[in-house]
Figure (cartoon, rainbow, N blue to C red):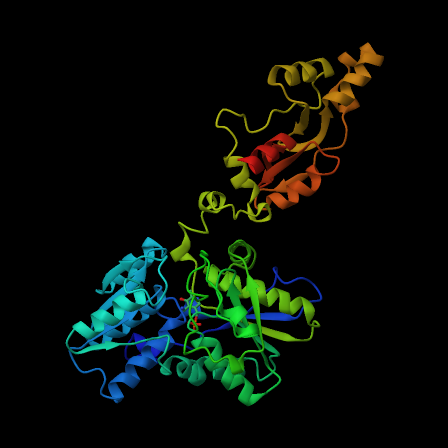
Length: 454
Ligand code: PMP
């Protein structure tokens, strides 16, 4: 029998999974450390379990005590899990940019959540950090976990994340890439890996708007600007970020983070969170500069289910001007066409040219696919056929099959708009969209333009 005594025994030992389709040919191998497979769905389970264990050992947390923390969500969930198993109370503060799902999740574990303003700096009295500290001071028998300054945070990763990566790659990795929030993960795992092999490169990924990258290279405290990716980047320098184990920090925009996350979900089947997208974007840059025999490990701190109403929503992406056409599938693009547009107006190869021209005029379309048994066998283009008819009227009564041009390109509905764009930017006036062997729609140049401008 292989039974865990409680859910805390299921923390860690997450799998390392090769990324396939998103990694270009000739680039280094990228292996994803799938931390979303921890019990609460994030890497923070490791830190939470270890911090509470240490606090108990040091007598800082006693039976019946209350755990207090400022958290972007994942830490809260992990602490709430530990608290539930061990019988503690939990109070969390959380900035209001976090998704509603994250807040609801904490409440589901029985925790109390206090939402604070996102736009306040860490040291403002009403920031989520200062409010948490105040609650910890005012609550009897409270323990403030203090993830930004508690050294048990990086230590948890020194003891677990680092060794697992070393073992699972049999010591053959060349580089570790991860986002920096508290910096606990990359500092702890980085320290372990560098002790094993000083040549392992540790690369941090930092959102545009965070101050960590500038601080790392210049020691200057810049000014933070708002960004949307959650759980990473800072407006302070966390005590748990140990820059001596970091070799490089790569800056990644919200747009790139979200689009890379969406691609990894769609193409490699791993539904990751935004900070995983951020880290993967940085890992892709690193891997492209390394030879194919090198190994890059990237951290995927959490999963995508918490972000279905944010960056996995096309509408949210469009509203925030993050949508990268390359990542929108053709079936979704078809769904945005006005409701009264017929899926495809087509003619049969046996119809006359007169009938085909009549249909094109009636429907005000400038190209028409020729379909036989649901398959595309050719097309007529208004300009081309008109020219021919003007010079030879007799053509009006010939069959479409005798005058038609080659078929419009046929693309699977699961392919992205980027693929359609490649055809439409060149000689084709439209592409046909196919699903399970049948043509289900058409995307013309003007449909694509409409999609882009809306
Ligand atoms: N991604 C997400 C979603 C997180 O919640 C966190 C933790 N804040 C991180 C990445 C960064 O991990 P760390 O704090 O160990 O740097």
